Amino acid sequence: MTGISLAGLTKEFDDVTAVDGVDLDVREGEFLVLVGPSGCGKSTTLRLLAGLETPTDGTVSINDRDVTDVEASDRNIAMVFQNYALYPHMSAERNMTFGLKSATDFSGDEADRRVAEAAEILDIEDLLDRKPAALSGGEKQRVAIGRALVRDPDVFLMDEPLSNLDAKLRVQMRAELAELHAELQTTTLYVTHDQVEAMTLGDRVAVMDDGQLQQVAPPQTLYDRPETRFVAEFIGSPGMNTVRARLDGTGDCRAVVWGDSRVELPDPDPGLGTDEPVIFGARPEDFSQDPAGPVDLEVTVTEPLGDSMLVRGTAGGADLEVSLEPRADVRAGNTVSLAPDPDRLHLFDPDTGEAVYHSAPEVANREQSAVVDARTARGG
Image (cartoon, rainbow, N blue to C red):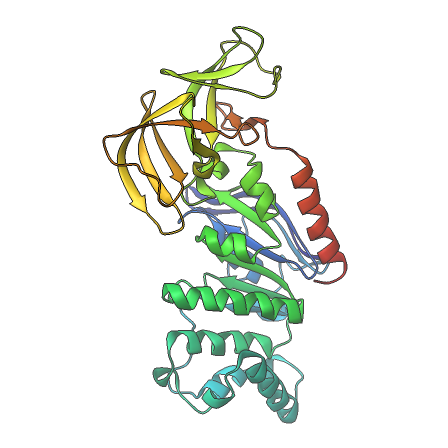
């Protein structure tokens, strides 16, 4: 059974297409994260699924039931919003139960039992008598999640629920959301612009840009084998370095050349023509210092991060960011010779942005997919 299915989902506002023909299946019990930059259409997609917007075209199904024309109140979904949406004059408990009797068949005793269970799961038993003004941001978010829990929905929809929290609390709440999903196994679609949330929370991650899905895959697959230049640059902090270059077939191997930099590909025949323009990609951590390295980086800025040192500069006239050992003796004005990891090289079409070559072994991709498929099959 499919938890959620979106087919050809489109939403137009006058002459603006916010969601453009999205096809997406969320497996039953899966935690899928929809991530992308501001304005890419991810929140509109969530609102279409919730029934808060009417699609211009396409269909929405929940548990194999077409709900495209079904009212939001009859879709058996629960939504957690960015701004908590708590009634300021009601206690936490009253916020959690408000409208529960009219929206469900639960009796008063059943509602009280569900509130008690949700409060125990979220560790907010001592907060039920407090009003929102007396709660911290994290406590308000727990109450908002508790309100969703007591409804026993088929689907959880979460719209950037952690964006108003400070950095430390976001980390804590991410862990708690992961634990909560592991316990409840409710199909969840979570929207965020924060790729760290996406990578740490999602069984799979759907990357969206300009109203369209770019790639849907397990987190590590997105990172290791991005299908488009956009995904390569968006996923990762910093994102993948991408450089306009050309393929050179001189000698017995193929190499990527830009300026005075020349990086040989491990595959002598990557299936691409000689002297063809490409976008070369390599992640910051996939460079290492090597006196004989083929890339000479003229350093402009160093950023010590404790566990690593981020070094920015130019090589062959192109901007690069590389992650080196935390105590590397590198300063602005230095020239550092670098060697990229031959098993972590990527090429993209300069016109379409689509990936045309990965040196990363595909075995890791299959193994990651198998882990996710097994976890989904057993309900966790």
